[in-house]
Length: 412
Image 1 (tube, rainbow, N blue to C red):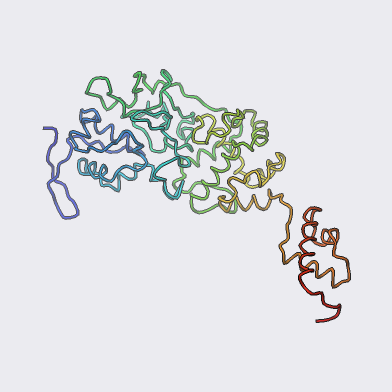
Image 2 (cartoon, rainbow, N blue to C red; image 1 turned 60 degrees about the vertical axis):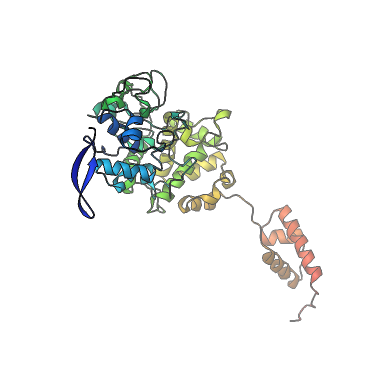
C-alpha cells in the first residue's frame, strides 16, 4: 500500500490522517514546484501518476506557473499528505515577495522582477528558472531556489557567478517537472541536477563571471540581493522604509537605461565601465527587463547600483551630460516613487514655466494700474515667459479686458 496512517496533532486535538511514507522537508528557500517534484520522485512515482492518481488531485498543475498562485485545493492536498501547514507552503511561492518587490503579485500577465516561464501546455518557452551550477554541486539533494525566479538575481550571491538559464548541452530552459516523460517510470530524487531533455548534468556547467570594474557597487549589489528581504537597500536621504517603492524605482532605472530613450545613458555608462551596457539593437529596444539574459541584466543592475551609490549626484550628472530630461521618462513619470520623482522633478524638469489664468490677469492688472502698456514683451519681462507663451498670455489678457468694463484710474 502506498500510503500509511499516522497520528498527528491538529487544531482539534489528535487526529488520524493519511500521510505519505516519504515526505522530504522543503530545503531553505526552496520554491514550491521544486519541492513538489522532489516529493513525487522521493516516493517513486512520476508526477502525473503521483498527483492525479495517488493524491487524487485532478486539476491542472504543470500547464501553468504553479509557483505564482497555486490553487488552494492543491496546497490543502499537499498539507494533508505531508504535514506541512498551508501557510508554510505559501512561503514557497513567489507570493512571498508581496509587500517587498511588489504590492501584490498579479494573477496573470507579466510581473516586475519575476522571470516569465512562457508556459505552452507543459513546456516552457522562456528561461524562467535560473540556476547556479556551484550551488547545485554543493547541494546534498539538488533543488531550485525561490529567488532564482527573480530577474533581480542575475548573479549568485554566494559564488558571484552569472546565473545560468539554459542547459549548455541542448540550450533548453530548465523544466524539472518534465523529468520522466518518455523515459522510465522510476525517477531518482537527484534527477533535478540533470537536464530533463538531454540528461546533461547541470552541475558541470562552466561558471561565467563578469569582470566589473567598480568594486564598491559590486559589493553593494551583492548585499542588496542577499539581504533585501531584511531591508538592505539604500538611495540616500529619501530611502523608503518599505521595499516596494525602492524596488519600483530601481526597476524604473534599469528600464529607462535600457529603454528607447536611453541611448546616450548607455553610451556614457559604457565609457565609464569599459563595456557595453544594455542593448542598442533595434529589435531589442522593446524587450522588457525580465526578458533579457542574465548577463545583460547583471550589467544593468550594477550600473543602476553604481548610480545609487552616490544618489542623486551621479544620476543628475549622467542625465545632464546625456541631455536626458524629465520628458524622456514620460512613460513612467506619473508612477515614480517619491525618492525618484523628487529628483526627476527638481533636476530633470526642463519644461518652460506656464502661468495659470489668474497669474496672467493679475500681471495684466499690475501693468495697467502702473500705466504701462500690456503687451507680449511686457508680460514676458514681468513673468519670465518665452515669446510663444507670452503671446498666448497676451491674447488671454485681451479677451479678459474686453469682457470686463474698464474702470477709471484711481477708482475703487
